[in-house]
Length: 204
Image (cartoon, rainbow, N blue to C red; front, side):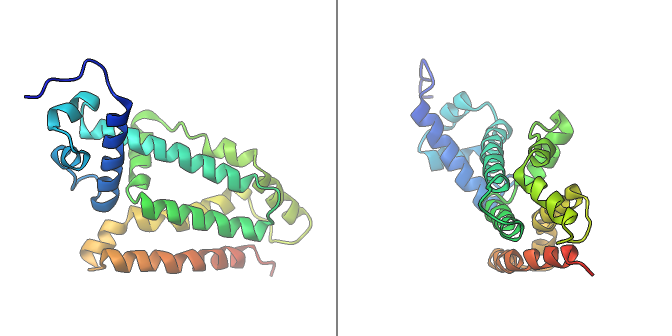
């Protein structure tokens, strides 16, 4: 067995994270083994275990990094004062679906992680203090859109974007939808969701 290094090397650790992120994204959490990650990283299994005690801990580390990056991106879109409400909704949908197609296991990870340890994303607070929230309230006040609780609007955007990824294994395994077909559906959905949201907001 190869000797363990006296101290952890940031380059090796990053190489492991890059390899694990690639495999988790391509195959999903359950299908990936620690030996697969070690082989993709170009290291032995003992060294992988030295840096990350288990596959679960490595997956959690990667997803926490992805969620942090994701929340920063969402916050940037919501607080952009140069875009109107319609453009902002379209950008949010595109950002959600692009991120989810790159990290399809994220929704289930977030749900299980929040159930076990509680959510630390502060998403509701981020939304409540955003320029996006003010735009929705102002549009309702001016009669430009139908009266709606801003949180319900955001839940619709999130739900329409995320649900297919929560149920994707059912669609793919039971309905015989291939990975390529699923991606094509999500690309179509990226164009359709803003239209559905517009229909919800349109005044009768």
